[in-house]
Image (tube, rainbow over all chains, first blue to last red; front, side, top):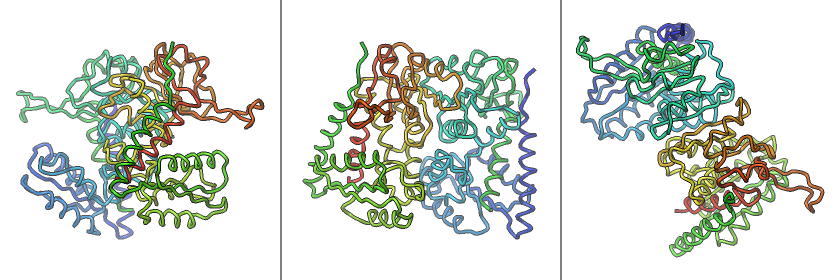
Length: 287
Length: 287
């Protein structure tokens, strides 16, 4: 029977550590503060932003939610970021992705003070990750995946890992984390142009799926006894649900789970980790 | 019979392109300038620095060679870098690696104006490479390897590439270049902790060896018909040579060549490309 890696439980552990660190910081007169900027009205973005702010409140973190209209200009977003860069009560800033099309997201990310870039997307933090300089911020989702592997007791050294997806949000940082000294995995980055993807994935002791396609990874992709981390959070229409949709991973859990040594479910796997790592990064920023 | 990829010839093509670009820039009153800083008396470093300066002279580039004693302090090196950052006749700056042990090389690299960092080692350029932002400088050796692959007509899209070595000088940037959109290879990064290295390498359509161990890659590592790029430039004692040594790659050429579709020799493969790409980066910096 496979181990179902319980992201809610591991996230709760991370948040318990965070609560202790927050208490310490508060005793020194510091309340870590996170600002979340939402531009427009994307429904998924609204949900993410609300749950981040709610989690801050639960933990006694200071948080600020700034909502700009979907017609906001680049200059308006810059002005908000610059105000937050200067605000001493704010240690972490994130601008919820994706912004509306008139906004140059990369330029906004570059405008964030790298020391407050708790999403880890600023070029200075990207470089620190590549250079294995631990003073930077690691993007929350791949950081959460690494923590799940550790929590499940998965040894990465000398193991074959295949990361499916080459985005700068998940795929590339995940590959850089797995190949870094200390993790020491042999890492393959696969993507939409990869030929024989099933064969490539079947080599893997550890598969990380980050493609954004529901149920994309099937049994043929998975070696017996592999560990599978499913980063996908896809909304699939489902008339039987009140919301009209259900969440579905990039991995066909039903088809794959029995072959694995351990696997993350969706929901309740990587998802809860992302927000926990965001809180952890915010505390790091406050230190 | 394998194609022996002639690095001298490809480098000559790159330098011919450079000569044309230099002529154009000069007609606009701009002479690209490169400053090479050597700290200490490492014999290999001295050779590299001299050949870089000589190549600049051949091409009509302005160059400056700054030699500091092996007792130079961090502050002295900083002072030189800061002067060069301000010097309008200097468009490219490189500090020859490795400096003596009292020098913090990473701090020196960070002090170089990223717009003059023709080695591509500054964090801003590292991030641009990871983010696939072509406005940055790509490290010369991996850039040279990509050019050799193109010159040999090697298609990378959908091909399996294995990069052996995970340094920020060659291994990681090479992997990032091969996996980037447009190159589209499926890339595996292998290293000293990789198990079954021969098996991992045998999957590869393209093997890039950057480990710094003479004759490390043997026939058992190479699939029939693979393309092999040998980044190693190792000095091996050889009493029969006047110099007392010969240059030797990371690939056992004799054992491997006949199995390959194409292979780079050492010397005369990747080596000449590095300096050609440095000149190309200096011209880019001057534009």
